[in-house]
Image 1 (cartoon, rainbow, N blue to C red):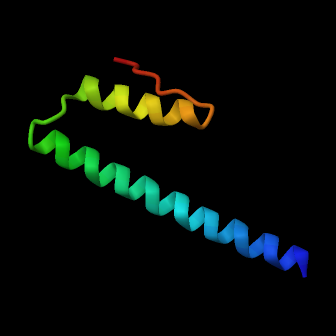
Image 2 (image 1 turned 90 degrees about the horizontal axis):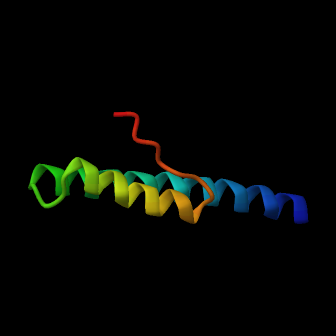
Length: 61
């Protein structure tokens, strides 16, 4: 029973992560298209988000 609950929880978390990523992508695209954020600012925002999860955004330009 606990294994089933863990599996369901894992699936729900994956769906939540995918939904969150899509929402962030949509918001950043909107902000860029309306000139409210520039590419450098978008990279900075993504880096802040990534660092919350133990990663970082690397700007290769």
